[in-house]
Length: 150
Ligand SMILES: [Zn+2]
Ligand SMILES: [Zn+2]
Image 1: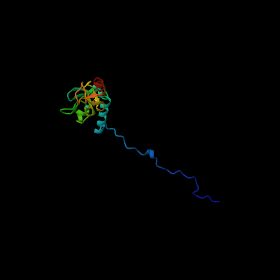
Image 2: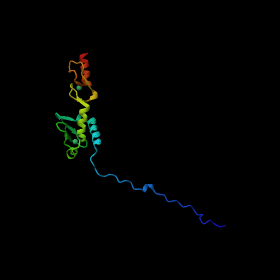
Image 3: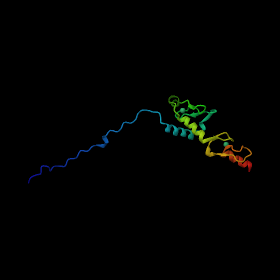
Image 4: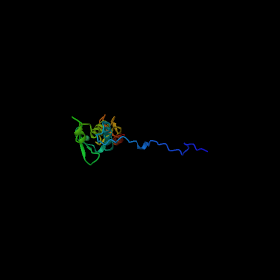
């Protein structure tokens, strides 16, 4: 009985190991974040640290630094500026400037207590003995006037 010459143990077929395909190298350059990231970080600062953003003079605010206990000085008028490196070096609207601009758009100072509140917590005075009509007051001050006029 003749053995077929090709009758031998089946060899394993070599396959390409996909794990060995080199990946694209990771970007290592530390570029300044694009504008959209600055904006969202600015909104986060304004949202989380509203009470820490202080007005220094008309159109000028101090904004807390996110990584240290320092604060940056942001001016919104007559020209927009910030004392941080990102703003000074690149001229970009940095996250601190975004924070102040977002705060100014979305909040106001209560005429009653003088504290800055988000717009959704401010109410326009319609009829009051304490405040002028059209004044924006917070819910706490609004509750105070409600009991006075009742
Ligand atoms: Zn800045
Ligand atoms: Zn108030």
